Length: 286
Image (tube, rainbow, N blue to C red; front, side, top):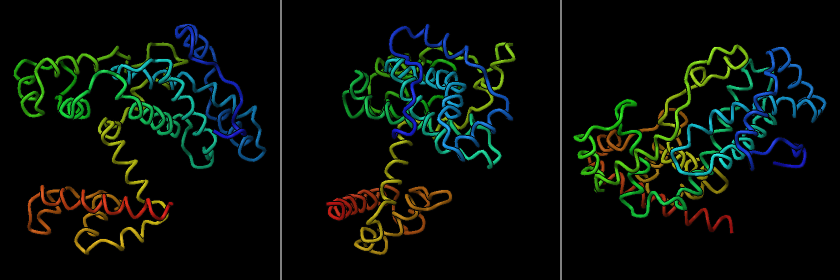
C-alpha cells in the first residue's frame, strides 16, 4: 500500500480473540452510507471516509481468513494479509458500478491471503516431497463433498498421487481446520456478511489455480509479444489457448484433439514454450 492509504487499523497480532471482539464492534454500513463514504474518498481523497469503509469490513476479513486455517499458518498473519487486500479494494472501489464493497473486496482479500499461503506453505511442514506437494494442491478438489474421507477413498487418493495413506489422512486433517457457520447466527447486524452470501466455486481459490493465474498475469506484461514471436506456430497457439484467452481457456485434451496428438504431448510443448518465453521475458526485463 502507498502512503495515501497508510492510516492505522487494529492489528491482529497479540490477542486474536480481543481483535475479533474489537472489529465486531465496528458498525456495519448501510448501502447509502457506504456509497456516500466511497464517493467522498474517490472525489475528495478523504482518508477518514476510507478508514470508515475499511473498519466496517474488517469482520469480513476474519470470516474469510478462518477458511484458510487448514494450511497451518498463523491466523493472525492470515488476517493481517487479508486486511491489506481489503485496503487495496477500498482504494480501487468504484461506488458507481452498482456493486457492494463487500462483493468487490472479497477478491482482493482472498488474493492477498492466497499469495501469502503460496509464498509460505513450504515453511509449514506439510509438503516436503514432490508427491506431498501434489497432494497439498489436489486433495480438496479430489474430495467428494464435505464428509471425511472413507478408507477406500483414502487408498485411491494415496495410490493416484503416490503418497502414503498416512499422508492423505494427515493432510485432510490439516485442511479441516475449524468450521465457520455458513448461515447467519440470528444477529441481524452480521447477516449480510455471513459466508453463505458470498461463497463461490472453491476451485478458483486453490493454490494451484492461484499459481496458474499469477503465471498468466505475468505473461501479459511488457515483452509478451516479443516472447510469443519467438515461438513456432503450434507452440504459440497452445500458449494463447491455455494462458492468454480472455474467455474460457482450452484444456490439454481439447488441444490434443485439435493437433491430433496426446494430451501429454501438448503439456510437454506447453512447458517447453513457457520456458522459452520466461527466458525471453527475463532478457527484456534486464
